[in-house]
Length: 274
Image 1 (tube, rainbow, N blue to C red):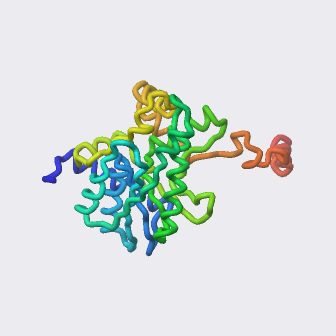
Image 2 (image 1 turned 90 degrees about the horizontal axis):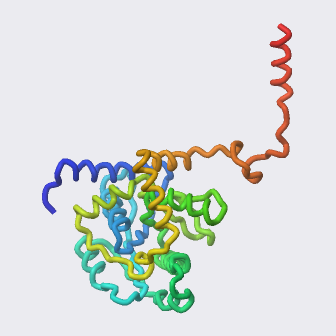
Image 3 (image 1 turned 120 degrees about the horizontal axis):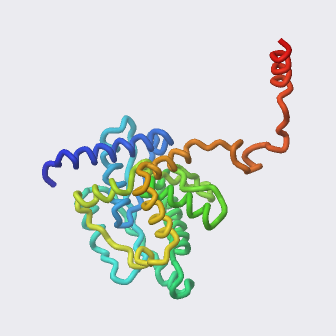
């Protein structure tokens, strides 16, 4: 691609800076890591790969990148697109073939959302493959907006205050998941994908479903952002500034043993008597 415009250059620098900050803040990548970059063919994962390849060149540590795509055997999936793109980049890559599409279509009733089951099947397959190739980190392309949306989804529909952590040890204890785009805005990623002209592969299984709860939450947040710019950013900052004593989770804060501070009470009495 040719010379970047001023705005394109600023955008590229911003994404690289924010990803670099997230990687550093959460110690996502360490010396000698083998990072398995999960590539779906969407704008987020393409941008993540692009940013990590740049980071690999400029970082003070050495780490390897392996791109991995999972072919879920969806009808019409263009099998040639990703191999051609990755060969041109000249990086190591693997295509993992697993027919989760048929499983999802068989188990999920018509009209119901497939995302939850599809995600679990895909995640399990990728965890296993990460073990097979000796990957020490598994990079996913979730961004700041995904994290905020997940926070509201869990609050509205699951009754819990949790989101997507930038770094996570999987339940099996054998895999560490990282999200290098955790500080990046979706609108920036979309703009970057547009001018880089990544060969986008649309999801014909879940991305086209109109009755997704996530889409409802996304539209709600977009409406808030239009009315009060900066609100989404403030919500994301709140996820980094949790005060357990101001909530109601007894597992996080010992409310039952909360008592008057006798020392403070004594000092107050002394001041009053003076």
